[in-house]
Length: 384
Image (tube, rainbow, N blue to C red; front, side):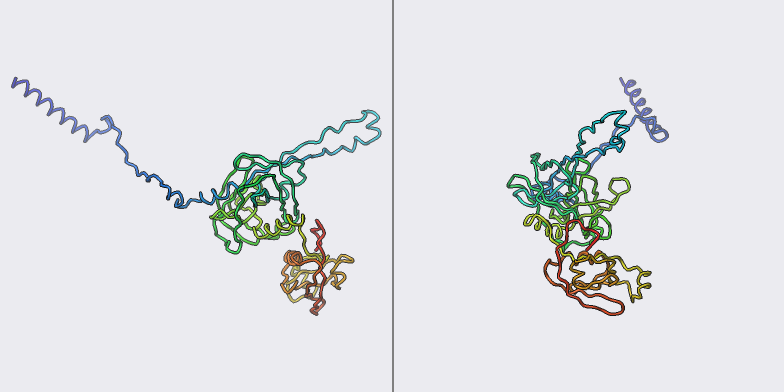
């Protein structure tokens, strides 16, 4: 028995020594065992923590999402008739050729519920030439919509659906919006469904883009894609600060340069459309161009300020007041004119049938004129 015990002890000793040498010199020869991993787990969120998520904009999205709708429009596109079809010789040999039915085009866009009784604010180009308009709410309900009115020159339109107790959005304050503020763009890009993207306000008061007649855009890098048009741009509280309108893109996709109509402008236009069916703007009947250094030198002007009057509509308020081609418009209602776009905005803000002071430079003299403002005709982007 003692001998067996000695043999066992010697065997264990040799085995331990062998394992020690193997572990030291060739550890890869030994089978590996999984090492337990300890991870740090965040505590379960309580009811109070739902509103305290750091870096999250869930509350803004939760507040605004129900008020953003999908707009589906059906547009009738007539096929262009080939000139040969009207040629007598062609018709003699080939007979009458049927034109075929007009094509239907399905358009997609977005809109924002601005009242609980069904008024929707969207872009004019979303519903332009639409034969049928369907609005789908966030809860899945779909309604037929009618156009209350539109303003092509600002690219805005107001729709209405027959429903009540709807989740209307809260309007924000443009006065507090600053470059660098975080904003969310909500819409239906490419028809994939309601989508939220985040970015910042890149610039304010963007104009001279050639998108609309009247421009005063919020620029943002929040991703805006086709289908987002007419959707909401909201602040971190979920309040509406703009209507998504256009993107700068060479490919049709978002490149981080999007434009939205400020809520202050949209609200004013929306209220006029709802109350009067159209937007009323001032007009005096002039055509203006920017004063370049070359023009300033050729006209002998001391600087590039103002807008050069290139033409005056005969019988217009400007013609009646004595404004002439070659005059340089310096101020409108006491506010300085820096270029034709600013002139357009200042005159449009005037009330028709009221008199307003205009200051002009004529030759080397400064002239003060009182102009009785007229009503701007529809779709006259070349003249003011």
